[in-house]
Image (cartoon, rainbow, N blue to C red):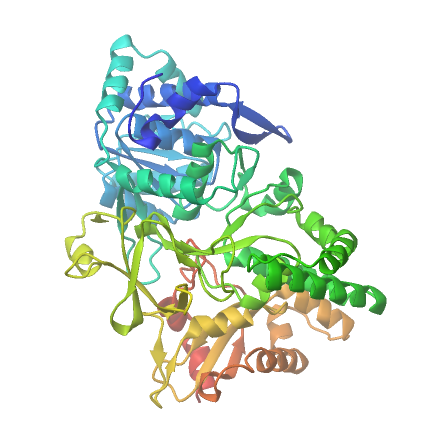
Length: 604
């Protein structure tokens, strides 16, 4: 277990279990508390898992699927695959049986890890249609062993198989590890597919070697003294790459196994680091605004003054790398103690160092609010196909509204139709089994087409404008960028989800899903009577409330961009209905199809 290898992910558990055996690798939640797992323990787990995979016939560059919510076993399965020169393929825990079948067959996976009984049931439902699948392994004690499934093995039995493996098996694992190359495929990341079927982005080890080295040299403010909370899916390249980075530089990672428990977890762990998507901050912002609005006038005035001082200090001076005047620093410390520290503590981010955020646009108003509160949100931009980060805020001098400057070693230029093009050592090799899609994804001279439109501001920072495929034109010939409107409306505490409509139409409309709990509270205060959510969203007072808030939120937009009519729905867009991707992006074609009647009514 002490062999070295030039691939970071291939050798990491073994080199670190030797150099820092007693340091904590990660924490797992067991029996109501967080328990630490040392690197020496992780090294043994990975080694045993690798030997078990070899015993089960997993060969060089064979695919191994992981179908589970976040849990330590997902990380062990990843690193065991790397140690064996196999290719782990992560599936979102919410994937349907059809999606599982597609990815298993497209990747040709021989073995799949499952994290729950429902995931096991989904695999069993379609396993007869997956000719390559030979083994199913549970990743948790709670996964029941089916009596009529000879291919199934519990996680405990799987690890025992590796622990009792022969000396020949151990030598084979070590031989493969020593022969691993940077050209080996590390993993396939299946895009969530807002349109069409998912595509597996081929990321060789060279992509991760470059990614981890670039981030190590860039994020000098992240050290082993930090702690990270892993709550985005490890099937998402953002969380996968960030968690790998933390393990690489020695930051202990708390693995949250239930995304519904994130509020509890973050308050217990109080991480200094955590990568997240904008929706997390949008919900936190709405909750804080709700609490502020419920305060008495004196407290509201105190909060207003505190935010004003925080904005001045953190945005006008700290953001720009300027020395804060002594008088301002003194006032900031007073208001920080009285107000902002309480807000941060209530959220669980009072020990915060850096909170990378990407995946979708986040309103500048929300960014500025949290920066004013002393929460260091670092906005970035990246894709599955670029091993996550393309650009991010630098430590100082960044512009709110941009997604920062390209990171070291990554080239970016603006192509036709304003498309952002990327070239560098972290860009994927192509799409698995899809030569035509691979060819279409690159320019003739080798630049990757991101599908995102944007431009460089005078400081050289990237400003995103829209997904090119999302841009639409009204029948009056005006181009509309729906995400800009959706992001703006997403600030509102009464609005949960928005889909802007208007392609080839006379004017812009929107389907809006209200934030139901906030709406119910408003109805209670206004003595609005209703029997169910359908009746609530059809209430004229509720519609007037939403209409007034939409009008206020879109004041800065041109008249032709503004939403003229809207439909309120009594239920959320969901992944189960195909309306959201696994990364919570809306699937516009599906929404247009599902709500054709409501859409047509807005244009009648």
